[in-house]
Length: 416
Image (cartoon, rainbow, N blue to C red; front, side):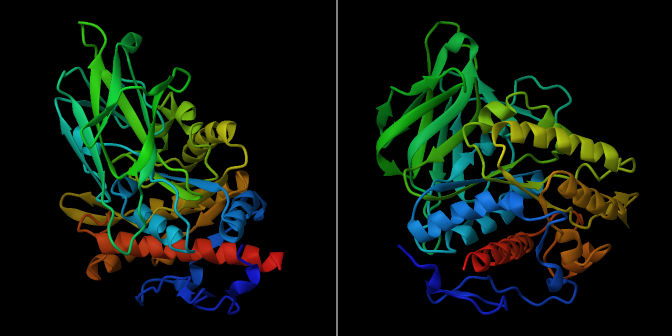
């Protein structure tokens, strides 16, 4: 057991030292970034984060328990650079914090960009459904995306990219969320040419659970038909788990998604119940505020509906909003600053007050209105003045991590 006295606090200066490791991530100096604002803001109080921080105490000082975090968003999160940087930082905060990779999706089979930290390949023809579509052809779940295939040769393969000096995400349990008409098709797991036919099907969650007798970093899913019609199988998520205590950080993003996009997902709560998150990070909003007719009241109403659905599953879940980044609109080959960034910023703080949540005000941290042009000049943002380059997203992940850990260390100091 590790004693809290082993922590060396330096009055919340630039660094804390924990077992000779720098707890904070070093942030390069940029004149447009306001480091004094890099913190979590609580319009009410921090009470909603106490259950989460208490779980972190048990994990760090007793080596017990699991913490489940889900980060929702649009294209910023589907790419999983920003969220993966946050994930890696949390898992290297203290020796022994591991746990599973959590929720993943084979985006490449849906003909869209896949996170780099795991590779997906596929065989057969797959038809995608996304929560951004006007007409939803298949019922969607927590991920906001699904793929369907009736191809007898259909396969999905996943390979975790376990790299040196980074956390490993080996898993011993695989849960496949999906369905077919009358359960006429079931997924078959293949690992190293060995078939695992006997999954445990749970009709309540429409999921298939595979328990392995060893740990692995890759899998292939085949699909076995139980009738001659070969109805399509619809896959909406894969959850990778293990038996280690630690932090599971899942990122869920769909390019172009807004808050109403996730409200279309009729199986959202059903899937979320498999995770029961301790912390939800919301990075949804850049698409909501992209148009000329952005209505902050409707924006807040939509978020309130989504939060109620989450609280129905996990009442003690902490909620953290990240404000929209500064962005520009394009019209007739010219770019114009999107002043909705200021309006949405105010809405996020009002939401946090209403739902006893926290806000990470990235809009102000990055420099406020018109700052996206500065990020682009510094090589951190793309030419569309909406998205970031890899280094920009990694910087965001380091900034958010530093703000989050600062708040956790304040919690620790109150315990002593």
